[in-house]
Length: 185
Length: 98
Image 1 (cartoon, rainbow over the protein chains, first blue to last red):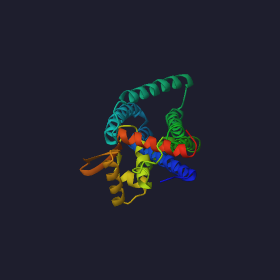
Image 2: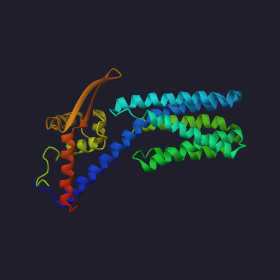
Image 3: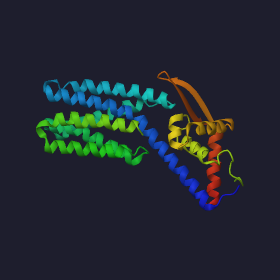
Image 4: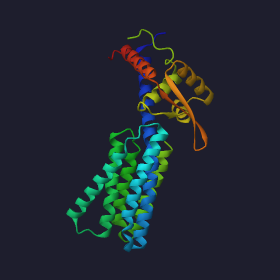
């Protein structure tokens, strides 16, 4: 049994292709339920604030619920994929850093109007997703991140009077659709 | 470096199975249905190749129930990981890479 250099090269390319496809697919399928859950959080949060702005405290409840949900999902996904479940501190740390960053940003940039505050969070999440797509095997996060940034900016300038409805439908709905797309990977 | 390729791995479908499992972190498992999609093999064909790799001690197969449905998953063993790395080194040796 002997192999020519061309055959060996082809085999190495096939190996690399299969490894990349597998890593991308696993990354997408692991991430999918997180996006769907946060999409639901956004739909509820933006819908409530659009229809009853006095209930803006709902966001604190939803974000705490989402953080707890992320930890539960992380544990469940780790079991499903056979991974070690040692990421709990990463979720807590991530939400802590985001909370600290948003508090600092909103304090420095104020006074901000309601639409500006509503746009900041999706823009930050969008850039976060885009970087995940660029720097890890989960390339599908890149178009999701770019779409989130683009649609948030579009709604902010084109539909200022309906921006929170826009974010409920396009932002939250977009995350849910994006999660379903990841799940199909 | 070996003079001949490992005959267990040196087969297109088995090579794809090994490549897919190698892409995962050490303890992570890949479902049979995902392996089928990634290798492009038919169900019967895939089952036969998985058995060959399992008998060689290169992969470990786990069967359980998930959401009340039977589930088959596989992962590389340490011997399988080492054999795959040797196989890749063999290929690199042929094209003059070290």
